[in-house]
Length: 287
Image 1 (cartoon, rainbow, N blue to C red):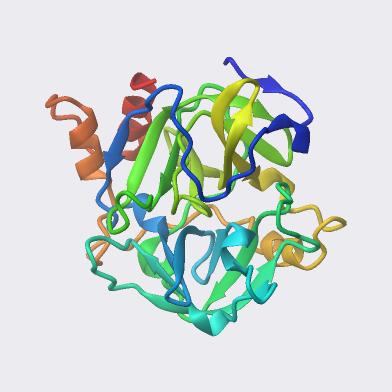
Image 2 (tube, one colour):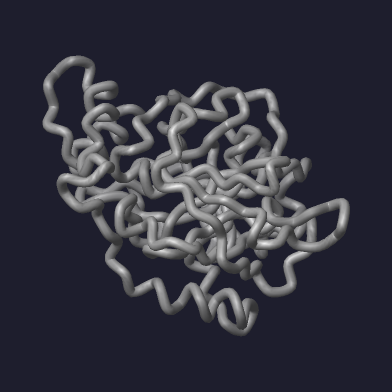
């Protein structure tokens, strides 16, 4: 697989830069996806106080995961109030039919700026937008499964971009390094592993830097988020959601239940049926 299962620490990276761009060692393929197609609809733009934005991903009908640093106000040295946080799943081209406010924010216990493993937060939403947008189950790394990162990078703030063809560089139970290419706006977005029965959420993008001598992207591993000794408050909330097998959007709703546009863009005109299994197959071929 080309990645090593190692114990990661802050010495693995040279540069901590949560929202910066680094020159790419190689260009992964990128695709502007139709944000109102499942599974892309599970992610959304997270607007904070009209001053900045990140990406977030649904893990229930009323909860998202994102990066803790997105919700931290470095001026006041405190958290932005929930009332200033808006989440828009499936946001695209200025259209925001599923926009909702945050009801509450629970950052990983003990997080401080610069802390990699704890750079995550659970946001409870006012409205159960996940019923319409859907969400995917959380899971672990699956050997051989293609990886892709999803987010609203600053070069394309009103369109969702999929960075695919990624390889895992290093991983342990708490943190992952891959060679997806992070950019401003991607923080808090999902790292997906694509399986024939649908994607799994395996990480939350948090940092760009260097790992094992390569320019890379770091993500908190969802397998480490359930440690209730380390994260007594945040993990308690999340553990109540982990039994969910995911949720597909209802047929006939505003969200398309199959990734038709993505499959059409990836299959080179072969007319591949737009199923999640075929999406996983096409992404595997792109590596």
